[in-house]
Length: 120
Image 1 (tube, rainbow, N blue to C red):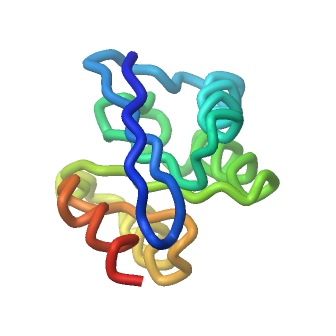
Image 2 (image 1 turned 135 degrees about the vertical axis):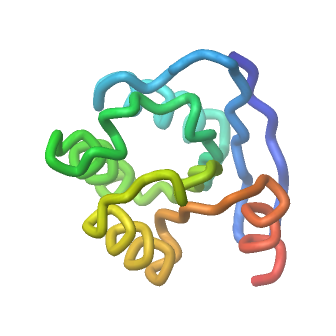
């Protein structure tokens, strides 16, 4: 795992780079989040491939548990991936509502992720 820091007007983004699933449960999410916050990040950028696939099945409650940790510590999260492959209406609604709040964002590309925070 590599952490790359990017400075933006909205705060420092910690881009997590890895080919492995890094977040299998809320404890691993909390460890990565706290590590990045300790190093001065305000925003974490993760890729869909780094998340346990159960995260995208809302019935597992994994997404809610992980995002509650981000909310508690006032950290922002960007998840980059192709979410069109998920057919769940509740997940699509969840992504829509999350993006509207701008604390948790689901985007299709790294460029789109950086544009969100460089334009504010």
